[in-house]
Length: 128
Image (cartoon, rainbow, N blue to C red; front, side, top):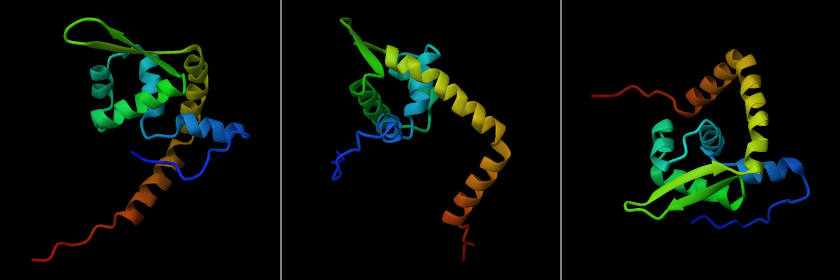
């Protein structure tokens, strides 16, 4: 597991936000849990590009940061569900606004993201 070498800055709101939201799938996990997808298998289906291991790690971090709560039902096979805490719910309007901002600037964002991807992943012709 990754071990931090630099102590997080706890004196800046942007850094605090980065600490709890940094992670490839965390924003999507929060959004999908808000939409009612609470079981790990449901979340996996909503984010097919993510491995179960990575999703579990990010869900654990969201739980540690008190944005989600995990409920384990005493049944066989085990049943697990996630729900947002009040702190997690308070993020939803902000995530919605970020999504609206991206929608308003989607042409430019798509262009620069595609350009960066192509620069970092040039197509090389195959030689026979």
